[in-house]
Length: 217
Image: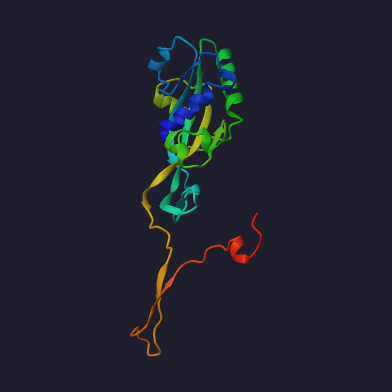
């Protein structure tokens, strides 16, 4: 699922205000060595933190229905995880980096909720909308200064971009076909089944116009 979130972000960051600009969208760790190899403007989205959003955890089972609205499978509810990205701009001049960050904000702010049909692969197959926040309050346990220190670089202007994505929980299993008829046996006065007759029970079918005597359209 994480690589599918990367795919969504690459498409969003490369579009909008940055469409046609030729700006590289990178996901590598922005270390000193990486920065030294840059010879063209780039926007870096570094995934620095993954943790479960326990406030979204659900219990029980989820029913999966077919095109006839019949339950065919059951599965556990998905688990939701916060994927936190450090988004930075890399150019020769600070003013140009600020322009790039402004373009990223302009591009990402309208996408607070990503619809299922905008999501690729197994992520989209879950049929769930995915929330996205940009430049929100930093809530992770590690400070940005600690992150930059771990990367071996100097503190740099950045945007915190968080995608809260569902991950399927296993197992998923098939259910039996719906019951179309059954056998009923009635106990006698003495409480035994001796001599009782079997009766076949079938669910009632919806009445048609010909059954009720109503004119057919």
